[in-house]
Length: 403
Image 1 (tube, rainbow, N blue to C red):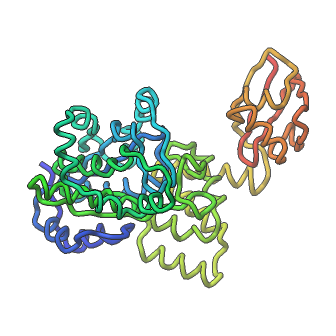
Image 2 (cartoon, rainbow, N blue to C red):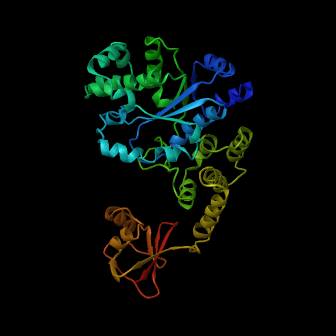
Image 3 (cartoon, helix red, strand yellow):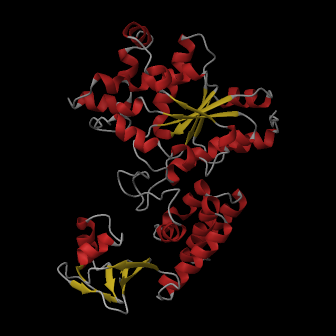
């Protein structure tokens, strides 16, 4: 049986580091110190197939509760994904098909396992109970919330004010997320700061169903690669947890300097004292931001890929970017056709996901053939016996050989 850790200092650290708000902190502290095993819930809708560093912020907080000995619940919102979370949206989200949802959530548990001990995780799907609600039960559930409460939600309020469409299914989304907490008898629910309204709905519904209301822990939203907007797959500003180490290293090196401390704080295991020193050194100009980003990249990759691969990614970056050398190990492609349009060739060897992306890469000077930048989208590349070295940006290398 897992021992529940009730050490006050450890509990205080869990409730402060990487946390924006705890509702209600005094209550949760008492419950954690009581030694009772709590049910800690985190829900994620499978609106994409990739979990990224933004998801990791709250997943790492869930791991903190797991390390205290509590029962963590990884809830996959396969039912609510059909509706789409309207949080922060100025227009309705396009509904997802059953096929899309199943494809997206296929590897969610495996990806979450990069952070959580999945042997001790309760994995649930909200279709288990939401699919089974009949119309009478749905009406009874809806009777427990009021229009006035829902209309106070900031993004709903704005859309109503601007006479923008707000569908009933979007209006009911927070109710269904709240009902998840009732079905799971959650003691605590985690979420990003943008989820606060939905998390509070869980507290309210639990009260109406005679349950002790869950405590709430909100975590900051991690900004994406360009800063400003939160990390999101739809904005293509994300770093996937399963990204290859060398690519992940390069992505982190591309961060703007003002995100360095933020990423150290929310994305690494460094002690707070170390992060405070990094912050003061950066502010005082006592350290090169590039060196800090190299340390940041190493620390993050070590978490998801291990120390050995983190070191290899660092060496790869130094060799290919700083020293501008080709790496020793390059993926080889053997092709029978010897004459290719560069656009087609980049797609064929997977340096571009589509012809559109390949054209943009070429036009922006991001494609090289044997070390030379090519900006002609109609360029024909001949595959010789010696092979052709293709390069995408600073880090992507492929050698094409005649079959």
